[in-house]
Image (cartoon, rainbow over all chains, first blue to last red; front, side, top):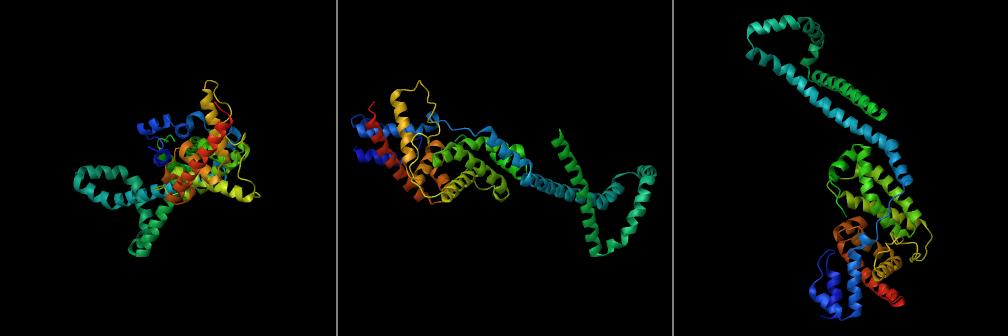
Length: 175
Length: 187
């Protein structure tokens, strides 16, 4: 092993790799290579003897205060928007499935007597609701009408979910 | 560098605006970034300002960060560019740093340390301060921050070959300077 071999080996090794015995043996008899080896080991242990500095509390506070204002705030709002849209979309699909699928499922699974009993109980609520829905029935016969109803439904649900989430967010910020 | 558990989840929450996740990410990376910037600028106060600037850029740019890439190298890249912008904005001056000022952790050495080791560490810090900035930066990222060559290349925006060349030259220059310092102060 020559001095060039040792330096080449040091340059090519990854930090953390074990030092081959041949390098140690050569370094024992060569002061320059011994220093190069000591330097390499010292560099490997640099995080131990040269501790990383800590950012001052004031500097950290200045950065963190930005998360509560400016784009940080809009980042929160954007997150709430996305989550609200997703929740509203899911709810709309569930409601549509309930309206179109649930009646036929109930008719096929429940006894006529049970259905009549349920009808008597729910009539005060379903009656006015049915009247309200029937006003929009003509729209359901047109493609654009269906799209409009879907969009209106989504907008209503989105507004409700968004409001609820914003209220929760405000409550969390307040306490 | 110690890995941060649940980093991906924290980044995801941070992108949705969760301030607590940002605080945890910043708490993990701030000392690495500050150490690098202190190494590059040689001045603690300037490094603090640049570190602050780096994390404000992280905060502003988090929406454009793609989660399939490494958050660590992205942060280091922003720190690297911030230091570069700072160097460009100042009038040209000699690369060599004040030998007493540019060493994170240089002060406050433990008294129990062996004299020879302490001398070697001091020589390393002094020699690092005299290296060209590009060499100093890649050596610091490799040894002090524990980044791989590929991560350093991504952080400084250079090919891996260039980083390897800088490391090779940096190590060579470091050996020569440390040897010279050790000859000045025989153990």
